[in-house]
Image (cartoon, rainbow over all chains, first blue to last red; front, side, top):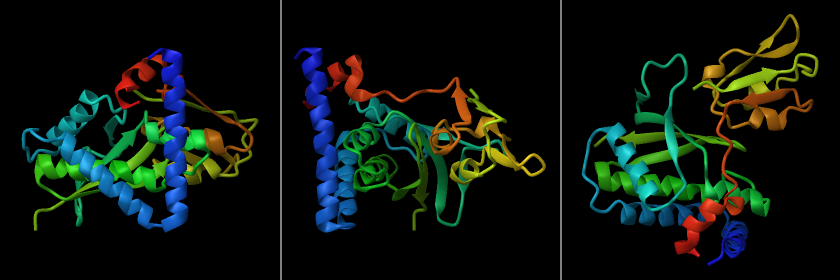
Length: 164
Length: 84
């Protein structure tokens, strides 16, 4: 396919994605979040099949990043710590916490293209993706909370739950 | 690598919107001058929300990763071929 055609097709796909999210949210309200989450879980599990098991969080995050890169998903992320934090990984009552920064994101671009707000149901897909991938890689439950959805980057808190 | 942030002193009105929106507490209010100042540029994640929200357009950033506009990025369009 010619690049200009690809570009047009991609624009259409992104607008379509935004329209689906908007329509679903309007029709079924907050349940749209669960649908996107489960779609993300399925994707995360499917793409991380065969990835070596590890209990090391940094190794697991590297593997998750590799899965995204190998599949051409430009949903890349990096770990983050503030100037007063000694380490990237922090233990809390809820589990092990890591702050992540997401820069290039096709979902964010789709939402902007469609004029849709951030932190909606589509953003839950990434939450689901991490939950699915980390279930395969670490055999642990996790959550990915959006702390801040920015115009050029998003800031999220990944919590890996302790094994009960 | 630390992002460069500049607050234009003559433009800043000290409204504190940037302080409120910043997720990593990069800014502080200089109470004496009633201006927002950069305290921890090293904590900036370059989300650019401060620049977007500033009513007087006083905040600018340098040396940061600007996100790809996927539907205009020729290389990305080619990589997306398998999805389309």
